[in-house]
Image (cartoon, rainbow, N blue to C red):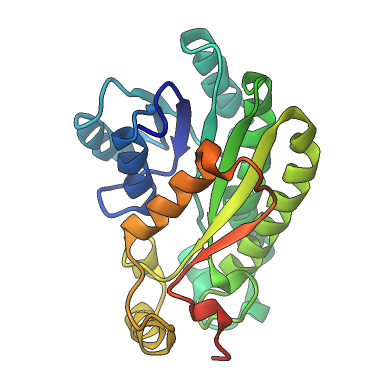
Length: 254
């Protein structure tokens, strides 16, 4: 029960295949009290169905692109819980057309949307979370190797993930004096609904499996375990870092 007595918010649960849900299940199994957000009613149906398997979670509608909704979410958490111990940021989005063709053709609007949802949202959430983390806390974000390497068809998402990782470092520096740690988990390719929108994803998974030192796919539970480590007191001396959970693929030359 590593997270017994801890309360936290998970942003980004979409369905039972999402990495955010894997993290949620791991945190619940370790005794954490959880709040989950959903973007709209369509997504809310999925989240409510999954939440039925948890112990009295809070369900909160929130679109991360709305400052008003972000503020209202944390006001609700303050009223109900009074404090927050951890935050999981697992949201990313880019218009489909921005993931086709060449990055050089990315439109200004697609660039803005990708960075607003995938990168700036972490800063907005951290800013609202910090007053509730008076006794310290932990924040994690999910990222991907496309932040540092050119991954075909990842395009503007890779640039947004680079911004996300830079944000992790700056937030870690800002919030460290308050005892708040900020880290990221860089997962290998996992077959999720979001990943299915990337052209050639299947071949990327095969290449990863063939080249990673461990010679196998990355599993959601492995990412969840790493996330648990970063959210728990076991990582109390770790902040501003990107933890790769990809079977060692990131160390290889191709």
